[in-house]
Image (cartoon, rainbow, N blue to C red):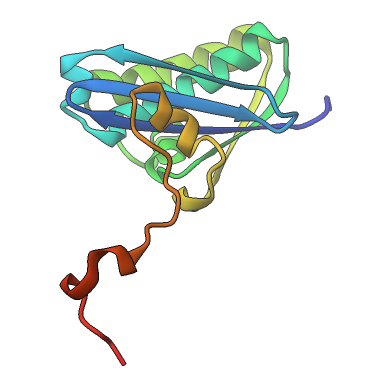
Length: 150
């Protein structure tokens, strides 16, 4: 079997914009934004779907045959394997796209669920739509707004 390539995928949504980001284990990253009012109605779920589709598209374009897509949306592999029903055009599209890629490109695609805070693609997706990084917030800057818990 060909070498396993891990691709981290994350999506975010704000004000009708979908931002997606992917981080390949070798260090390459890609991101973009799309304006899709219908997809944005699904909020982050739509963005996560778009990120996974972009991760698989990256693998096809780079002739990768054995990939592990790391996502923080646990529903993704369940829609793909049929244990959850894909019941809207976007989840159905995801399932059809993965099936087509597996068949036409003889690609092994597995999924791994990761903690969203530890997804290297998280800040890449956020920056695609102009949201700052998720650096640690200084609670002390809020003064007395935050009660003393001691």
